[in-house]
Amino acid sequence: MALAPGLHTKMAPEERVKQYLALWLQLGKQVVCGHDDRLLGTRRTIDGEAYSAEFEQLWRQILEKPQMYHLAGTVCSMKDLLSGHWSLLPCARCSLLYPINDSYLEAGPCPCQDLASWPDDGPPPRGPVCVQDYLDQIRLRLSRQKLIPTPPNEETTGGEARESDTCSLHGGGLHGGRSEHSLP
Image (cartoon, rainbow, N blue to C red):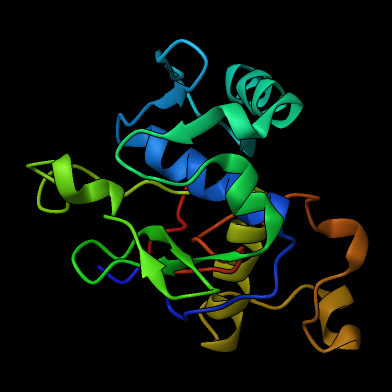
């Protein structure tokens, strides 16, 4: 179950941290508020092709005082992750991202360390998926295999997706691209 195909990706740190948090919340992890040790989470993280309103509200709350929050089972605050001094690398056990300090290569435990049934049970978490992009990819694969006729407008463009046809959220796997786990 390779959710993390590469070690580093070119993604804005804030979006990468947001994605990291969303994936772990889908597995039942919670965010700890350092002020009063309150545990915060969401019932739904993904809502169709976007993050849920509940998750977006939690994310905005975290961004207001990121030094006050960390994912349960980790040692670094959201501020640390957003600073760029920490990398999010795939865990050898579960392939999901966990934080490693870039300055002295300190790695805290992966959040999966206290999830007894992960990664063996349950579906893997995912990011939002643009259903139209996904269906277009299937249609293009089938047309290349000559199983369905190619629409006339694609014969002239060489099968490239038009910018107006794509969703603003290119969800999918952990790195914003498509993976075997980026299906809706």
